[in-house]
Length: 368
Image (cartoon, rainbow, N blue to C red; front, side, top):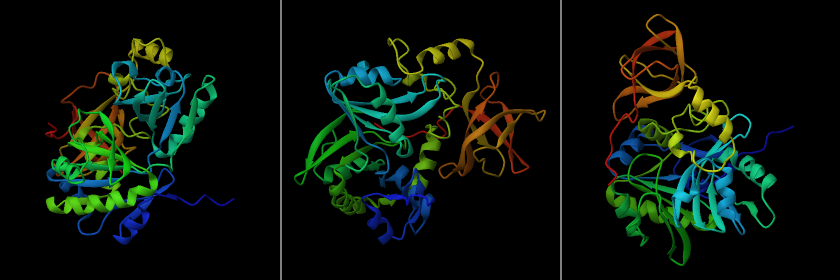
C-alpha cells in the first residue's frame, strides 16, 4: 500500500520558485527555509523588522447552527464566554478519558451560531470527527481545510505592512475583523506564534497567491523576508510557546504544560474536565520548564535531563539554538521539586551539557 502524497498549500509554486527547502508538516509539503541565510536570517528579520509565513497547512473547520458557540464551549477547555464576538481564543481539545491533548487550536467566535476553528494540520480530521460524533441535531461541523489559506505577518513593522495593503490594523490582541482586499474577503486576526506584534490573514484558498505577492512587495520596503517554518519554530521556542506533539500530547496534559490559563475550570464541563481536576488536585505530575544551556551544545527533543547526582529528573520536549541569545535553549518536563535556578545536565547523545532551569520566555519582546 503506497503512502498518500503530501498535500500542498496554495503557495506551493511560490515557495518552489524561491527554491525553498521543503519538508513534510502534518502531511503537507511546506517550506523550512529559503536560500540566502536560512533560519538565522529569517528569525532576525521577524525580531527586528518583519517576516511573512505561509501557514496554510493549518486546519480550518466551521461549526454552524443554533447554539454552535455553546456546543464548542462544551467540547474545548477554554471558556468562550469570557470573550464576545468578534474575538478569537486559544483553547485545547482534550481526551475525555485521559485528559491528554488531542490538539490545541484557535477558535474564532463569529456569532452565537458560528465558530470558525483553526486546529493543527495533522489533527483537523480527528477534531472534526470527535465533534461530529456528539454534535446535537441542527449543528454541523464542516472540515474546510482546503477552503482557506493562512498567511502570518509578524514583526515590529507588521502594522505598516498590513496597512500598506489597505487592511485594518487597529485591533486588540486576539480580535479579528472580516475585511475586503481588492474585492476579496480576508479575515484579519491580531495574533501570532512568534511573540512579536503581528497578524494572521485568512483569505480564500484561490485568493492566497495574490495576497502573498502583495505582501512580498510590501515587506520589501522594510527589508522583510518570506520565512519558513524553521524560523517559526525557533521564534516560538524563544517565547516558550507550546507545540502540539512536543509540549502538548496525549500523554502531556494542560496541567503538565502549565496551560491552565487556557482552561475554564469554572465551566459546567468540557472534554476531560473531571480527570484534569483530579490530576490537578493530586499534584503528582511533571511540570514544564525552560532550560538555558550554560555550555556549548544544543538540547534536542527526547534528551534526558539529570540532576547533579546523575538521576534522570526529566526530558526535553523541544530544543534548539536560540538565534537571539546564541545559546542552546529547551522546553522540558521536570519532576516536581525542581525549581528555577536549578543546575542540571542534558544528556546530548552521551555528552553532558550543563544548563540552568529558567521560566520562559527566553527573550523579551515589545508587542505594544
